[in-house]
Length: 280
Ligand SMILES: Cc1cc2nc3c(=O)[nH]c(=O)nc-3n(C[C@H](O)[C@H](O)[C@H](O)COP(=O)(O)O)c2cc1C
Image (cartoon, rainbow, N blue to C red; front, side):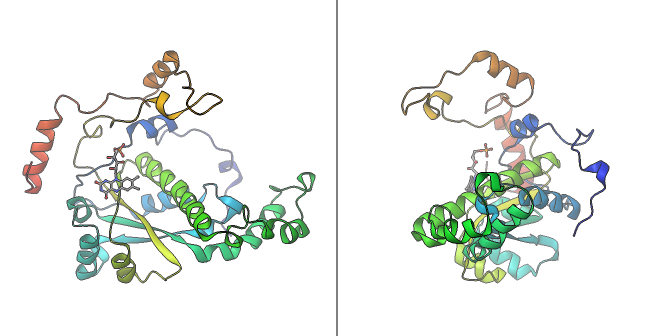
């Protein structure tokens, strides 16, 4: 069991790190890394610790597992195979750390114990009807809760949500640690073979960690669909009002930032391409 000093239990803001709004606003998919600057193991651990604390259905956190690959400590042939599996995207070779996030369907075997753990922890309470008997007689027999009791398709997309929540947090945690980060897609079987990932697990997404070679704005905040096209008020299709005063507040807090491309972005890309010997 990890011992935590009681005074450190209550969360207080720290002089280090970003505010939540700054972390959300400053995060970018970083596509150029300083290949020469390693990432401290402590920072990688902090990213993983943040992901581990995130919410998951029935507390079934065993579904989301990850293999961390430190480029400079990995057999060069294995690392080359991983970069190849990542479609040789140049940033995969530059980034000194890769996190191979997986969805392990075997993790659902722990559902009963995890639910019981929530009762023991005082999170699921008897005043809401929770008991071991309720878990065994109702929850584990209801496909909406025990996903493995229902359609596999549903279980798989729910599992992808679980892992996605962890990955989203890991991206923000990396930003908070002053790292550049990005998600990559690759050839799942090739990666699984190289990393010894069992058949129960599927590589979901690969997270790069490194120090950014591009500016922290990485050319500005990337385009997104309009707020009103995404969020509805009470009924699908009824656009939700976007209050400009709230937008202004988020600009002040550093969450909504200047949209890409910043005026110097072309010159930045040309300089980066020259440094890495890539076409611009
Ligand atoms: C699941 C997922 C897979 C992605 N795969 C790749 C990839 O293989 N290569 C890449 O350059 N970017 C990849 N991205 C990054 C997106 O292209 C990126 O989110 C988009 O460019 C928006 O930029 P932003 O993340 O800086 O806001 C991926 C993102 C997600 C969420």
